[in-house]
Length: 450
Ligand SMILES: NC(=O)c1ccc[n+]([C@@H]2O[C@H](COP(=O)([O-])OP(=O)(O)OC[C@H]3O[C@@H](n4cnc5c(N)ncnc54)[C@H](O)[C@@H]3O)[C@@H](O)[C@H]2O)c1
Image 1 (cartoon, rainbow, N blue to C red):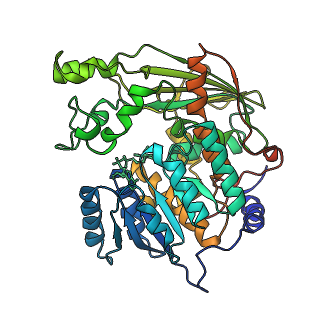
Image 2 (cartoon, rainbow, N blue to C red; image 1 turned 135 degrees about the vertical axis):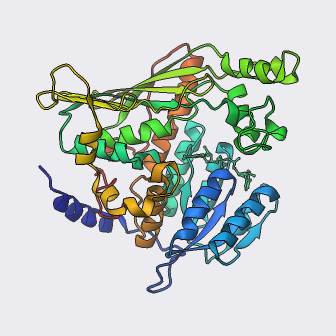
Image 3 (cartoon, helix red, strand yellow; image 1 turned 30 degrees about the vertical axis):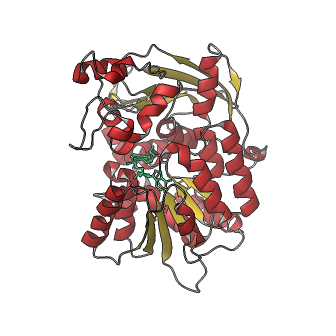
């Protein structure tokens, strides 16, 4: 079995090998401060900003947004942190290009609506910036390819800031997978099962307004995310579920997604919400939402695992990603916080509380950085994802979640839309690595820093 020391040895070599990237802005000798620019400082961008301001190795040089309200909130965060005021760019939808013109910016964190991600990532890579982009990088297969070819051409890495890969229980389970506790993996499940009705109709007056308005009358995600539910039907948010699963199954590194099929249920939840809070005569009650309330996707891998993903955001339900990791020796599920390992669990055929196992296999990164991460968003995982990005920039290396992961996970959305449109057609999954998946090695969470 590979020991942790071996992991570190192999991956340090791999990181060095991966670090042969053309020069970029992070150039001052011995200067370990990463100079960051923020494009989009809405609610998510502000989370990243807050974390970045806490770090001694980061200087926030500029922020850019198109809404003064979000800029004012962000400047409040900077002032509370006692840091120097960054340059503020509020110059229309293309104002971010001014931020990219600054030669002293090493890296950008992009937290804008999905429809802006590809354009901003491409422009940032072409401007030789290291890119950390919030989830969903590439809304179409063509956009996904553009991101890959531009990253390859410019030598600039793109990391999608998928934070759930760093969830403490998920990383403990990844540790268990790597130590063969589940045996050979056979089937995995995950998804995004989160009642977003109040987020999609947030009026901005209360933290979660939960009215019947969206678009111009909405606030934060309600300004843009709800429209996707009007126009599109598919798994619109696959990355929180698939990211950790892809890392456990070494996707793009000896394994790959080969086929995908999606089905959608009827669409009732968002319409019913409008009627409930706005009444039958509310103008939005006439809207026909395309997004099915529960979208189910199956993916097959070249190693013959099956993966089931669910997108479920419009009905009353408590939050759950719904992870299930199942192999020839046993199974873990997050919903019932339970585990069963044949021959090792206390009773045959009986679920066991997973806590003891998760504590025992707590990932070394969490053991090391748990205190630093305490207080960061989403139970601390937000600290880890930003840390991985910043450390990659400092080392000028490929991030542990790279451009191929970003587009492979994001491509599930357009593929699922096509599959549903074609009445549940099974589609071939593109190989964004162009064959490199056969020899690439997994670097995720095998280093002693990220
Ligand atoms: N990983 C997570 O846990 C997590 C959580 C929340 C949101 N997100 C993701 O973060 C992203 C942003 O979501 P959010 O909740 O912050 O939404 P938001 O609406 O609060 O923020 C988006 C911001 O982008 C700004 N913007 C729009 N167009 C712009 C442009 N052309 N130039 C500059 N700024 C522009 C908006 O004014 C807004 O302030 C999305 O991709 C979302 O899916 C991820």
